[in-house]
Image (cartoon, rainbow, N blue to C red; front, side):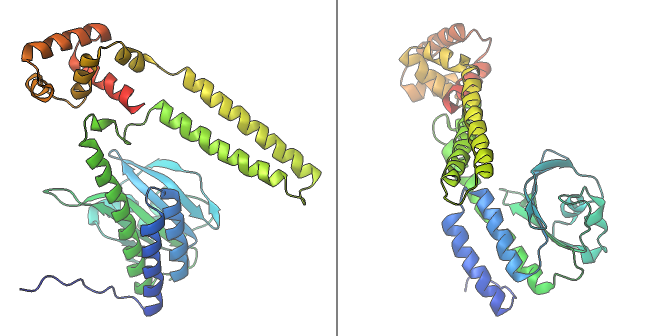
Length: 327
């Protein structure tokens, strides 16, 4: 019996060449660089059809969409969060679980939602593709969407829509694989403290390095021979501001809660071994088997840990240990 054959994507030859090149570049360059990924997909989509607005959104909670990336009329749009209502595109996607085209309802769902970008301009055509991730023993989960919009009517024919759907499915697979990689990391001891658990240290250090990168770029620009005195003064002010921001970030980091580190350091080596496994949610008999000690020894260690942490139960201790390990 022959295996299932992939159904060829029905796009024209020129579009197929563009998509094939995009596939190889995305696979090679944009894992973990989400801004670069979305920016590149926007450029590729613009080679296939007119794209005046390009918006990436992700569902969060029961009624919110976060928009980490949006580009409208040649300009980057600040990230934003909106609560979606019953008549907009998000609700439409959740009900129908398929690509939305403004031609389906003369743009009713498109214009019912909160506008992103330049609210003074009205999109005349739109294609919004849902992003799905597989779920074990259930239907795929709709976790996000990518919307491509044009200020001109009838911008998107069947060829461009199929190409957009293919591109968006590739984005969905990249994001899903990253989630699977994080799941593999969580299978390690104390694995719940992987990349999904952000701490103040992570945020502050990231921001400090990014601000430092901006400072270096500005400093290089100041050394260009054709930079006038007025521009030099403005650039010097930016360098000074970035230096102050980096200093303030480190000071803020020094003021953050050091309790988890201090409490963990108060434990003996044997107690630390128990605490790390406790963060994984192991019960007493599992702790004993993992450490090769008796159940009474485990209970003795747990009693000492609770006293040193000054906490009433193991769940609170486990949460505190995760915070320390994440740092």
